[in-house]
Length: 232
Image (cartoon, rainbow, N blue to C red; front, side, top):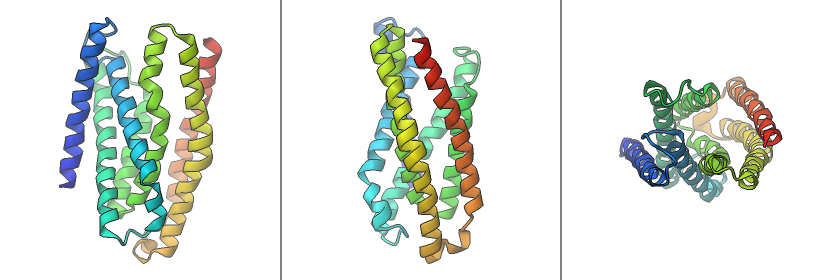
């Protein structure tokens, strides 16, 4: 049943890419399937959905942090597989774009981010700490504007482009770096301290190391966003 969620979402994302491609082709924005505009519109829609689901269910993380309620656990598992499906599907697209020669090179920062996310989600799956998946899902709200930003750049709308870049920078600093990642560390500490079933799996150094890698990547995104603003 849960793997059905994984494949269903992969199929749905493929349908989104095709749908956006046909619309954008009609307006002469794209010529080939799997170009960056339709893929980024799919990313925006998926990341918006992932973030919305995470915000909607955020209270359950703290109401049942030990995941003793089977209904909440199942809800979190379904979310986890949807999230994992997105990263796997999008990683395949990154590589497939290069294979089709639509893109000359793989975006290494995005590839690193996706591979790190897949690794983290696999560890979460192994440990059964599905609440962390929901917390990480909150970070995807930053990518809500990825597709619209590309389109605004394509149509040379500097006002909208600036607004989208500023939104990403604000979300990156005040939501991801100052709230979500510290919250993940605190949540992990609490569940491995208070929940009997997680106590033997406590590895604070691993969690801090992984989040340190994420912080390093996000500092790069921060500088990249500031440079984008300076150029426009």
